[in-house]
Image 1: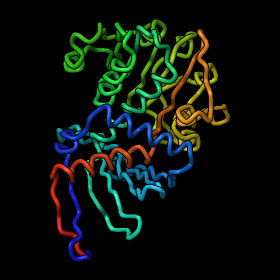
Image 2: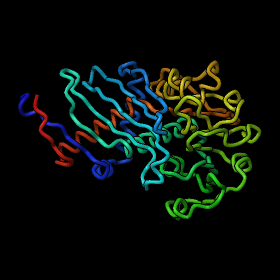
Image 3: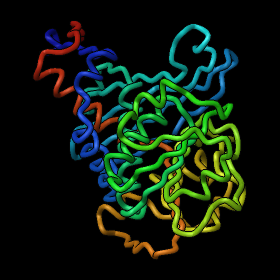
Image 4: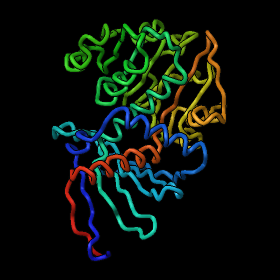
Length: 323
């Protein structure tokens, strides 16, 4: 009834309590498949710099056949670090598409981290060599941790990990998260680390090329996470021309991702591999790239999962929202 309508608020602690990696992976896989099958729509992305010093964005979309409609308002405010807060901020809203009424407001930071890591894991599962043993990760923040954790779960042969921090100095907190899971080495030379690696993950703010193109050798796979805004990049010029390129959404990647720097290069969407619309057989010396820009459909399928679990378990706060 209209008078009985309520809005459920699910905060950060509740979201983290409800996130289960395997469930998130399944939800993100579904998002890619829906996108490939053209059952889900992506609406135009908003991504704008603010006079206050942050970057504000909106990603939204729907899945008509599933009654799923939502958006994520998110961005990056670097000055938050000086306040002791997280620079990435995200809030997700799900709506009833038949009435336009909001169903829930969910803290989106943990969801963004988890769904991006799950997308990275799917990329590694589909594109990286199964016997990959050495990995280099650029970045030591929340997303770098999540991406490395996912990589260690889906590539069981990984034994050595180089990590490249912004100042090339060790990060004890980052290292402690992976004690006994791999040999973790702070790399003073980014090019040398990349050259020795079977897999490279770039998870930085995307301020510029992180290594030289000459360090990319045959048989390597690269997951590129940080370029999600016009002007951002992590790969050096000429990198994408060396191999096969995959992305989450071609149009979005050519506007916001690594493909913005080489928009004419042929690329395929990862969802088409999952649904069988496209085929890829990795050659022994192949070089592959996965350009992740983040899909609204991923946020929505994971948020729906959280919303359903929150309602079923009585988690979160139900607020009267009559109309």
